[in-house]
Amino acid sequence: MRWSEFAVKECVDVSNGEKLGSFAAADMEFNPTTGKIEGILLETARGAWLKKNARHLALSWAMIKKIGPEIVIVDTHSEKR
Image 1 (cartoon, rainbow, N blue to C red):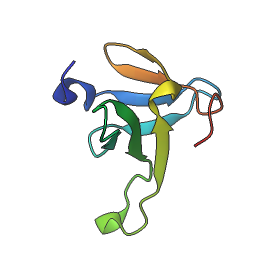
Image 2 (cartoon, helix red, strand yellow):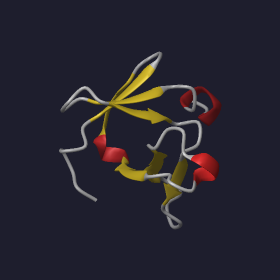
Image 3 (cartoon, rainbow, N blue to C red):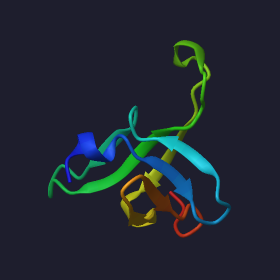
């Protein structure tokens, strides 16, 4: 799957059903040795003017439980970063 396809999906936490945000403005963390994706830094604050009040949530790749056609289901309580 390409990042452009992944970026349009919404992120939902399975533990409480909360929408965490979109991957459109997210950053990815790579392992420099292996090149594998280690995590995603998701921007969760909506309407943050000039990103001044933006909040970020660090998701490890292991927290992603299911990638569907429109949403990505994560479990934020499965692993703490």
